[in-house]
Length: 617
Image (cartoon, rainbow, N blue to C red):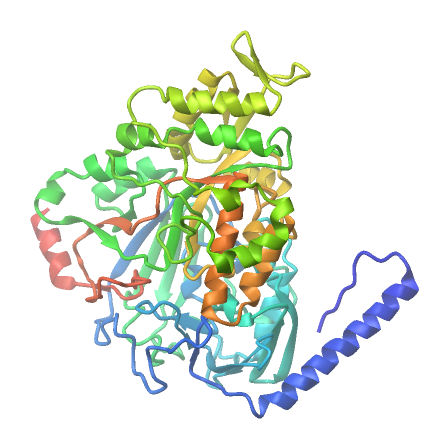
C-alpha cells in the first residue's frame, strides 16, 4: 500500500506522520478483514441508500437486451479527434469494451450496478469501505488470472496519474486500497463509497503483469494484453482502431453480458471534423453518427437513402444523463472574472432565445439549473431543509440565494436584446466600470476584454453571436481556435478566460461533484476555479449523505449556490441522443423510460437488411 505525506518540511514530522499513517491504514485494513466475515455480499449495489435492485441474484440477463441476438458482422463508427496511442490511460475510442470492469450498470433502472469482474460486493457499516470478491475464472486474453493485484495496481496507477484528462481527480475520494486475499479487494474512501459506483464501474482494470514494467502514461502503439469481450487487434495513429470479438471470452455467459457484444468487428475511423464525418455517413462509409447540431438534424439528411428507408433518424434514450448539453465557463482565477457582478453581466449579454430561433429552429429549451430535467434541480425558493444547510453560510452567499427564484434572463428572440444589454451595463457600472467612447473600461482605464478558447470550429456557432453581443456592449470579445493538444494544455494550466464544455451530469450526480466544483480539484476538471467554502461543504454533505432525501437536498442547495455565483452558464437542456444510422442492424425493444440505451453493445448485424441495401444501391 502506498502512503505519501506532503506539505511538511520537517523530516522527523514526516517520518512520524508516515508511521502513524501506516498504522492507521493497517488498523483500517485489519478492521475490514475482521468485518469481512460478517459483511453482506450481494450480486449488485446502488448509489442510492436503501435502494431495491430490480434484478434478483439469479437473473439470467438484462431485460433491455435480446439474449438470443445473433453474432457477426461489422460496425463502423467515427471519431473526430487525434490520438496516437493505444494506452488505456488515454481512453482510445472503443477501449471500454476491451477491458473488464468490476461492475456493470443496468440500463433500465435508476441506479443498479451488478457484479461483472466482481462476483459479489459489500459495503462496511460505516459506508467508508467497499469490498469486492473477484470471479476466480476471470482471465486476461493471454490466459493469466485476473486478481486483486490487478485491481489494486489499476486504481493506484490512475490515482497518481497527473495527465490533464486522467482519472486522478475523480478518484481523489480513495484513501487506501487493501488486497485482503488474491480474490478480495477493499477500497477505502473519505465519504460514502456507494456514491462512487459510476466511476468504479467505468474504470478499466489493466494487467499489472504487463504495465508494472511500463509507463501507462507514455503514448505507445504496442498492443497490450486485454481481458474484455473485444480485443484491440489493429490501430494506426490518427486513422483507425479495430476491435475483434473474442469468441472464448471468459465472461461471455455472465448475466450482465448475455445478449451483448454481438458484432464480430467494431472499427473506429477518424475524420477531421463533423462536416467530413456527415459526408462519410451519407456515402455509407460509416454506419452511425451522433448528431448534436440542430441545423443538420433538421435539414441535412433529406437524401435519397433516407427516402428509400435506408438511412434512419432515431434517438437513444439517455435518462441517466441530465443537465445541459453545454456550459459556458468563466475562469474566476483571472480578473475581472473573479468579480461576481462581471459574471452576472456576462450572463445578461447571452441571448439564448435568439440563438434558439435563428440557429436551432426553436428546438432547444434553456437549462435554469446545473441538474436540469432531474429531481436534483433546484426550483422556487429554498425549502426548510435546504435552508438548514444554507443558513450557516449566509454571510458567504449572495442574498438572492435566499430571496429570489433563479432564472436566466430571456428575450423575445427577435433582433437585439436591448433589455438584456441594458441590465448588463447596469451591472458593469455597479462593478466600477464605465463606457468611454463605446468601450467598457475599469476605473483605471483598462478595457474589459474576454477571449474564448476553443478546439472545435463547431462551437463557433454558439460563441460568435455571443461575442457579437459583447462587442455591442463595449467589451472586446475574441475567439481563439487552437489544436486539441494545445487546448488541453491550456485548460490544464488554467490559461484561458472562458471555454465551452459539456454540461451533462450522470443521474444521480455523485462522482462528478467533487472534481467539477470542489476547491481541491484541478483546473482541467474545475475550469471555473470554484473555490467557495459553501460549495465545498455542500459537496461533502451530498457525498456523505446516507439517505436519499439528504442527498437530494444537498445537491439542490449546491445548485442554488452555483447558479447565483454565475461561475458557469448552463445552456440548452440535454435531451435524448439523436442518431442517424444505416438500417442494417437489429435493435432490442426497450421501454420508453430507459436510463442507458444499450448502444452499440445491444445491437446486432442484420444480414437480410444489409443485403437489401447492398442489392438496391
